[in-house]
Image (cartoon, rainbow, N blue to C red; front, side, top):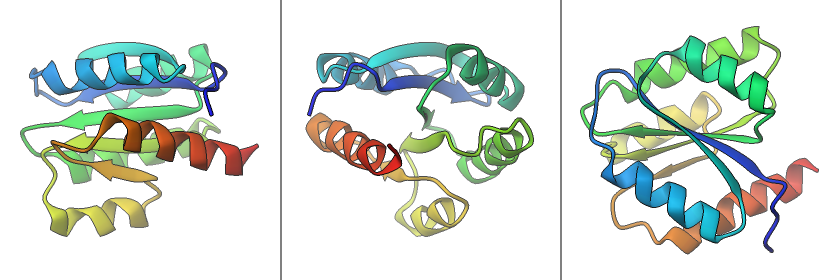
Length: 134
């Protein structure tokens, strides 16, 4: 299912500046028919939430390489809730230890993807949980 109405905001919270992976995800999701907004590196929860609200996004994708994924994601989830955006789906990718996946999902993260995850799998899972939301 290609659904151009799925709007995805991609961002790199915290101080990590490595962009290769998230740029590949952006291209892959665009190729899958999604509208992608790439916010860039060094983003705060406030900037991500503000853009999510402005752009009326369905999904926020966060990319991590150098740690901080648990605290930064929890902070974003709380900020989304406070802004009335708890319905926005959040996914995480990058270098995230397997032991941390369950904790991220427990706070509401829909998917956690590591290096080597096939792009088609990420796109299919986003389409799947978006079908369930409509």
